[in-house]
Image (cartoon, rainbow, N blue to C red; front, side, top):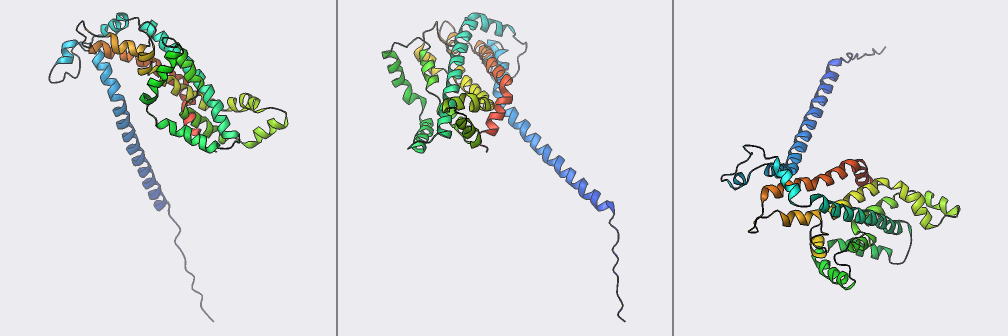
Length: 299
């Protein structure tokens, strides 16, 4: 008779499991601490210039000229912001910038969406080549096309008007076309086929189906285009007179002494107020902006 040896295993105790769980929690907390530290450092580096701009706008002129650097003002000069606001027609120039930015951002968003829809959903010979040329045009510096564009607008009598921004908006923007093309390419083909069966043309498909679905990309494109136009300095400086120019040009050219030297504390204070509208636009549309940038190109 063969004896059977029974090997008995000791029951597992929760001690080992608790140790593993505790080690996992420590690793997770360490990873989060490292990530948060990196985020705080990067955020500080990005906000540092803006913070220094605010501090500069609160200093006196002697403090700005002090050596070594006078890091903080001895007495905060809040009146610098009021002086910067009243020394120029701040609201008038801001109105000009707002009109140009809204016109351009609205038109270029819609035109880029239409072109992106065509590249994403329509078939035509040479479509890939044209799309490659479109993307390649993003590599061209602005200075290469600025002066020929100025000559064209001068011949058409559009200098010192807002028509250049209307035409630029209707011409679409390559980067925004790329965003819309990537988004529209990820939508199901069944939406388009069902609309065609119901007798809807491609224009109706775009306006009734695809465009309402693309609100995240619309928000992202509008914010990007608004920022481009609001922050542009070269085109308004070249195309517009001093009365119709934008806030960016007025700030860079108006806060000077009689000898032509810049008044840096007023320049900094005006620049801080100049940035506020961009921050407000982003805060209002940030949910759609983040969603549009994160979902573009995902199937």
